[in-house]
Amino acid sequence: MSSSHGPRSVHSSDGLLSLPHVAVIGAGIAGLAAARFLVRGGVRVTVLEGSPQIGGKLRVSEIAGVAVDEGAESMLARRPEGLDLVRGVGLGDELVYPGTTSAAILSYGTLRPMPAGQVMGIPTDLGALARSGLLSPAGLARVPLDLVRSQTPRGADVSVADYIGARLGREVVDRLVEPLLGGVYAGRAEDLSFDATLPAVADAARTHRSLIAAARAVREAAPAGAGPVFTTLPGGMGTLPQVLADLVEGAGGSVRTEAMVRELQRLPASAEGGPTATGGSERGGGLTAAGSGWRLTIGSAHEPEYLDVDAVIVAVPGRPAARLLADEAPAAARELDRIDYASMAIVTLAYSSTAFPRQPRGSGYLVPAVEGREVKAVTFSTVKWPHLGERHPGIVIVRCSIGRFGDEYLLQRSDEDLKAMAMAELAATCGVGELPIDHRVTRWGGGLPQYTVGHADRVARIRSAVAGLPGLAVAGAAYDGLGIPACVASGRSAASRVLEHLNHRGESSHGDDGQAQGTRSQPGDPLHHVVGLPGAEPGRGRQIRGGP
Image (cartoon, rainbow, N blue to C red; front, side, top):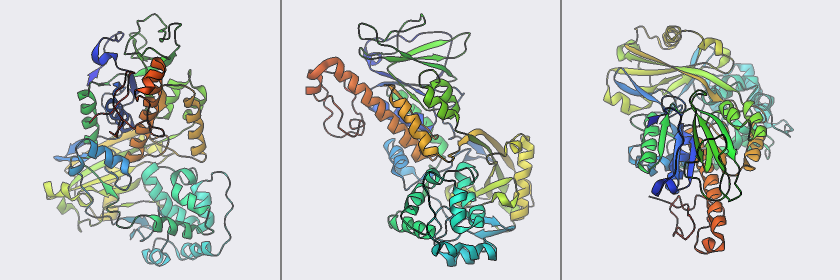
């Protein structure tokens, strides 16, 4: 990887530089996944990351000699996109799984077991809910009314708190649903969209009078014997970005850090059919002969660099994306600017095992906001992931999450203050009576997009606006999911759109003869060639093809 240096223009030449050139703005997991799909599709890729390092929210470093993730520590094993990507880069055999899935919720000052059968906090087993002791007697008595009440009318989107509260009572929202959603979004149930954050349950609720019945239907629809819910890599999920970057560069692409893209401009087609570079710099970057391209302005206003490319994937958070799209896609920019983000910090503490009067047994616990504590979640990493404990016996690694949407004041405190909050939580709840032997504070400012009411419609409007600009696509956590598989799917979808555009341009520039040689993508899947399906024989047109 390289950093950006001085003003320069990129020039095309024979060989690799004559291929269609795509820029990916942002080297988080969505951008790197998109780049991986693109290089396999036979195009030249430049990934531009404004910060000093790649990976976005995937990062790993050592604490007390143990490599522990600073951001996302695992991915869903029941969605295929993340697993397929990991297997595709040769790491499938290295995947490891949790040693325990048992977790607790701190309710009324006491750790209580997560009730069996819940679906993101929505109970399906009322007996298990009662035995958990999570709710007060009045709160527990309110829940079964859902089974006899008439269906709650629902037209447009509604908040999680409004819908679930109407069906099951406010205590279920506060002490079950919000803590679980908070672990994903760090958001507030009053603001989060029912349709966007709980789509399977929201869909089922439209055809079931009871929300409990809808949740039961979701559970019953899940495949039997689906295996573990989560998985990770032995060195941490934070090792995946570098693997992807190495593969992109090994295929002739470029991954650059400290390369902040400040402006994105569409280049109109010239009278001869090629893009016209405006602003006085030389055209470059592998532009093809037909259709318009894009110009990226990189670096400072004092020493700008210009990069002209055939297509662009914008894979940065909402507000940076809004700034880049303000001129060319103002309608999309307005919607992106409305996506709020929550900030949080993860305090990782390493203790001697003697610090715990009783060794932790579960994977961790969640803390509802109504408990009034600073820490919102605790993970016993060396218990949840046995491979960590096996390599370093006698050490207990704990990750404490601090901060919800609207709690930015907490994150204005010093690292020492945040460390003290985490230590106080463990002392109060687990009886920890020793100082940690090592610690780390990681701050994720504006790290988690908030899927507020109306989010799905907002994303539809963004995509509609972007669809009118050939060669442009968006990807990332702001759209269809925050988890690693969802981000990978977002990157793949963006790559698919770009490859479809480039295939179409290649066919157009060579007319019917190019089409006759089999250069058209298979209907319905512009990534047909990328996934290595039959029918990818090259023709006379510039074909976007697959690779190993």
